[in-house]
Amino acid sequence: MLEIVEILGLPFLACVLMAVVLGYFGIHVLKREVIFVDISLAQIAAVASILAHIIFKSHNDSLTVYILAVGFIVFISAFYALVRKKITQISLEAIIGVTYAVAAATALFLVGVAPGGHIHVQHMLAGTLLWINASEIIWITIVFSAICLCVFLCRKPLHAVTQDYQEKLEIGLYKTLWWDFIFYVLLGTVIISAVKIAGIVVVFAYLIIPAAISFLFARQTTSQLFIIWVAAILASIGGLLFSYYLDFSVAPSIAALLGVELILAAIAKKMFINTS
Image (cartoon, rainbow, N blue to C red; front, top):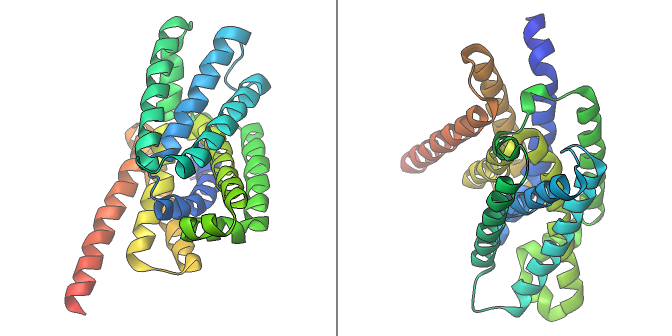
């Protein structure tokens, strides 16, 4: 028992931190109907990371990589906020898909140029969750706490823009664009830290699947958050134990269990409706 706690304690704490923060953003992402925004932002941050490695010989955990990634996120956040207003003929989700494809192609090209590029791909997809250390836990706690504080202070305008973008746009164009921009910057900053630890696959799963489960059973944000956190933490415990005992990769295990939870939730919802 002590051995399990020693090995899985820090990874579990990281999972809880990601579940709490990404769960909240997942509600906004589903309501905004920009499902693939996180993998797009993650891919753009990955391009920044590889560029920093090529140009500055920086490691993944260096300040240079982080600053460059945040800079890329700020730029693409401004792009998304403006495009949502200016280009009405094409959905924002389609534009997000295009930026993801371009960023992925760029990342693959740079991986071929960068020494040890295959390692970047592996870390980008699966992360290094099982090998997280105390200093990384402290860092993401600081980052996520700062993001949570910003979200709390800005919760009303962020919620208003998410709920009815067009109405808020008519009332105040520049304020709406500004809060849209802030949302993507905050989400992107969370994703930079989360992907470095857990990889794109599990971050996408944490963001979307628990929120989708919560939408099946609740409409109030507080109830949705409770369902999200319970679903994410249960999948985290199961995925970590699964990888510990069966020697499987932890990130795909967590993502797969979240998928199973969604299927079971959908079945339970259908049975509940049929019997009510």
